[in-house]
Amino acid sequence: TVHRTGNMVVRPMAPWLLLAGSLMAALLVSTEGFAKGKVSLRAPLATVPVSRGSSRSVACAVAGKDSSSRGGLRLLEWAGKGGFLPQPLLVKTAKTGWREAWKVLMSELAPQSKDGDYVRPSYGFRGKIGSAQYPATPGRYHLYTGNACPWCQRVLLVKAIRGISDKSLAHTVLIDDPTKASRGGWAFGDSPDRKDPVFGARDLREVYEACNPGYSGRCTAPLMVDKETKTVVCNESEDLVRMLNEAELSDSLEFDVDLYPPALRSEIDEANEWIYRQLNNGVYRCGFATTQEGYDRAISDVTEAMDRLERILGESRFVVGDKVTEADVRLLPTIARFDAVYHSFFKCTTRRVESLPNVKGWLRDMYTIPGVKDTLDIGAAANSYYSNLFPLNPG
Image (tube, rainbow, N blue to C red; front, side, top):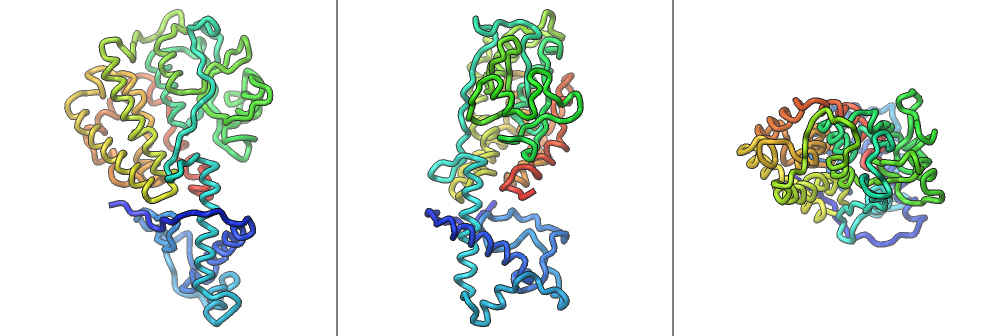
């Protein structure tokens, strides 16, 4: 059973108290290892899922007390000797301030419902290639993607599986570095293949600005732009997956593949719905939940979906029958990242792909499809999650 304790009702706080509480929490960490010993971040870490907002430091090892180390301001010792602030009040203030600050930062990273559930934002650009505004002309459009992003990978998977060449649809891989980006995390690199060939932009915000002067929304990837009209076509992965399957952006596709065949559309739509709700978005609901109840709902969905997948893939080679469809394309980015990232980082600890033979076999089959393995660098993706998703990880 996965437990995350420390749930509490959050009420508005004065800014000075929020800051003071956060400072107290930081000072407590450095004060003689909570007055018991020196905390070492280099010591072996526990494998028990860490509860957000909990006062227990299960991920730290406490070493023996070193008399030569003073360990910060020794606030707990002062409090214990009848100092300026009693220890119970000091600890409560620090915990409350730390949790309030964390909640504010989390709401900036991941919008929340009133019940503490992560709510994925909607996207405002949903043009369609093949329409009168955006004709299916090879070489006219440019795609921006990021390696760490599962929503980007699903678009690249369609491009790879259908054999759409870079000549027909070029794409640039962004770097995930919020210290270089002016809004969000996507920026361009210094190497020639990581620079922006369309607008000469420094980050993805400048691309959005070039297409829509004064734009103030979220600067997300994947993003497709029309090089001819200098406008955004679409930034919704679901739409991009479908349009790249339908639009003829190449004079001759390397592979004649239809990922959304008419005879299977109702089954694919049904699979897409629960795969998105329980897995694609479910893992993020686990990681970004800010209440115990929100997390419990999310982990229940993830667990149920993984078990359902194991049953389905024990009876058929792919999610919908014996051929790869759009349902497999939508599923792969989540399964590919599951053990390396979501299991530990998002606390999806009830299942592992490694322990599900049918899901593991399906993943192996997907990687045998030409071009699929080139759509993800899992090592770089894991590093991005663990180092750049502040405040889940301070980096």
